[in-house]
Amino acid sequence: MARQRSKKYKEILETARQLFWKHGYRRVTVEEICREAETSKMTFYRYFSNKLELAKAVFDAVAEKGMHDFKAVLYSDTSPSEKLENMLRLKLEGTNEISNEFVSDFYNNEDLGLKQYIEEKTQTFLKEVIEDIRIAQQKGWFRKDMKPEFFLYMSQKSIDLMNDEYLKSFITRRRK
Image (cartoon, rainbow, N blue to C red; front, side, top):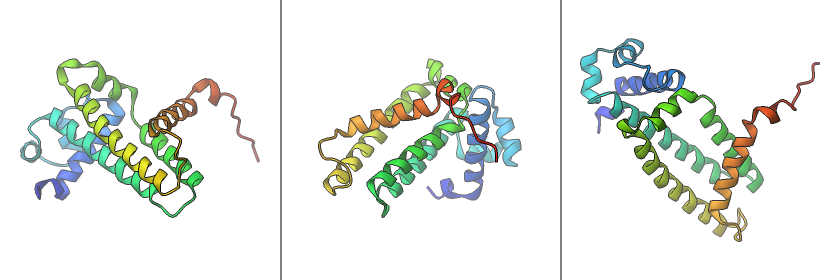
């Protein structure tokens, strides 16, 4: 997979991620990706058979980075409370810049098959996270009587609360 590690491959991937996150999947064209990545369509098609395969590659790259960052936090030399705080921060940051249009495009267009693709990849990711949490429990970093699935559920609910506009309205910044 030497091609996938090339500078141009990475540029196309990052450009597509930025455009997809900002505008959604449907509104972004291969031509726009090529223009922004300063590459030809021929080069684009050398790496990706179509925009759908590029979208899958973008999702895979984001998921792999997320997993890498999660493991770095989990296995860092920090206290359990710092680990949890940093994990929540990662999760929040990972979802902050994704547009609603992008998520809607992926999940509401059954013809693309992206929803199923993401759900399958997410299940694989969650199994790995659960296994890492179990290892953390064995090492004494987290309580052993807590189910890892509970931790995942609570982390998602915490993110939901942090993104809740009603709750945000109670937070005021003091002026200096």
